[in-house]
Structures are given as C-alpha cells and as structure tokens.
Length: 246
Image (cartoon, rainbow, N blue to C red; front, side):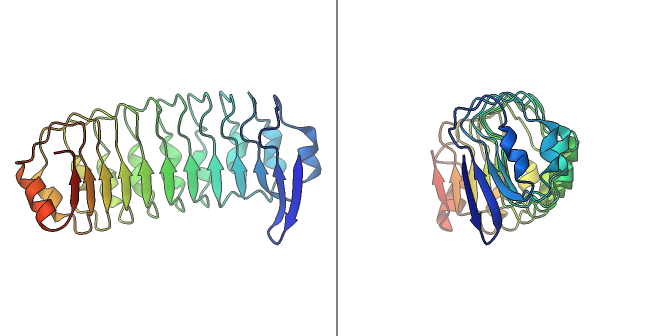
C-alpha cells in the first residue's frame, strides 16, 4: 500500500496489489480522500466503505466485482468513480444520490440497464457506459444538465430517449457499434454538440435537420451505408464540418 499526504488530504493506493479482498487497514484512514483499488481481483466491496466520510475519488476499475453496495452511494464523491472492467450486471438503484460526482465510468461490464435515479447526478460532466449490454437508456438521462461527454460504444441501442434534447451542454457523443438505423431525433437542436461518432451502425441516410446543429465539426459515419451524394453530407462539408466514411 502507498499512503501519501497532500494538500487535499490522504491518498490510499493499492493499484495492482494482488488483492482478492479489501485490505482491513483502509478503515484506519477514515479521513482518506482518494482510494485506488484498481487492477486487482476483488469480487466484493463491503458496505463499510460508507464510513469513509471524506472520500472524494474512488477507483474500483479492472476487478471482478459482480455488484456494488448501495452504501457506496452515500459517499461524498465529487471527483471520479471508476467501476469499469468488472462483471457488473446492474448498478445501485440509489446511484442518483451521487449528486456531486463529475465523472462516472461504468464501461466494460454486463449492464443491461442504467438506473432511473441516474438523473439525480446533476453535477456529472462525463458518463462512460461503453461495451455493456444496454438496449435502452432511462428517460432521466435528460436531467444531467451539466453533461458534456457521453460514451456509449458497443451496446445494442436503437434510439435515445427524447429527454436527451435537454442536454444543452453536450459536446461529445459516441454511439459507435450500436444498432441505430437513423440519427436519433433527440439530438436535434443541441446547441453545443461538436462531435458525433456513429461508426458501425445501420444508417442509410442523414436527416436534413443535422445541418442545423450550429457547432457540429466532426461526424464519423464509417461502416454505415450513407453515400457521398447524401444532401446533408454535402451541406455539412460545405460549411467545414469533417464528415468521415462516405
């Protein structure tokens, strides 16, 4: 274990420590603000983690977790929560309690859905849920008013909820390797959207409204069936937007 003290408090790191269970000495540092347990073989996170009442960042990525305790969502996390590359099939229904969290990575799991409480995470700036088994997203997604980046690669999504149209801060959207047959209409009118990645879907054409996205600067359509002659493609390129894949 590496323990370090900085201006922001105690940092505990067990990165690649060969752990199969949470080290008991963690509880000797109730003032810890950062806890890194990444790249181990953990299968369980004890509910006692809720006693770390100063914790601001938690890294549980690259383990073998099959679930997370609901008590985790009572922590005062306001930085990052990494739980990617585990064996999670669901997230705590109380996830929305983490209303100060700014970055959440739940990618590379086996999630079939995201909880409806997701919309309570009002400070979230970046959400990564790539390479799961998602077929739909909760309508509460549109309540993430601070969200700037949304990464959804490698699921089986066919549409986005209408509420996505309320994500007025969204800049980056990755929908690569899903099952979209058209560009989701929920994106129409998003004022700050700059990049959309739709590689590896089932698109045949673009909607005329896509040229109305005022800040769109890159649209990746590789491995779809949209052609060079598509009117929207021509219009986007004429104004300087980079369109790939036709």
